[in-house]
Length: 283
Image (cartoon, rainbow, N blue to C red; front, side):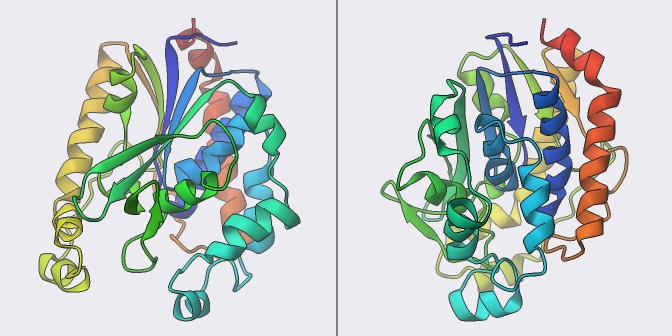
């Protein structure tokens, strides 16, 4: 089932992305396809499995490696400058330990976009990734590189960090591409309100990138606006929002496989609960 006018938007949230993984697995099981999708941060790194059509891969490799220091650890941060180990996450796993299906990804005509943030301007940068090439996973890594615990990623002539800092819910981006209807997967409940960060701390930690510090300081306002815009779009029928019904209770660096499974299962349950509404929206 596919409607050429309906696209998919997936926000980030680190390991809250297990919720998104559960939702998209149910969609794939029900043969719901999209002409285009955009992912931010974890929404990019996990959402790409929608284009490669690998049901269950996200929860499988995250449960397998969440306690591996090469995957996510203070040791990795101190040794490499990345909390989530770049070599292990973006090469060893997809190339050797739990192979990403490059061929299926390349053959799927779905347009897949990722969002990153230009650290010099603080503006979002959007990239369409049609094929797995030398830069494909580098763009995904850039989209998910959290400030202060990741090295900026240089690719495509940009120096980039986490896309969630500048465009956490890129609904308007997809609308600008001409997709009149969108399904938006959020990883926070409808009642969620993002609190502001400490401005002095941000400006000190990101003194090298003042535009990025400004983005981080104002992120709570941007995020509130984007969520409100999505919910208003839902009222006029152009958007369908899928989100948790409560706090997912999982950390950004969750090391408990059972906790990851619980969040994934919640995504599946909500997707199954909403599946008929999703199918109706696709018409």
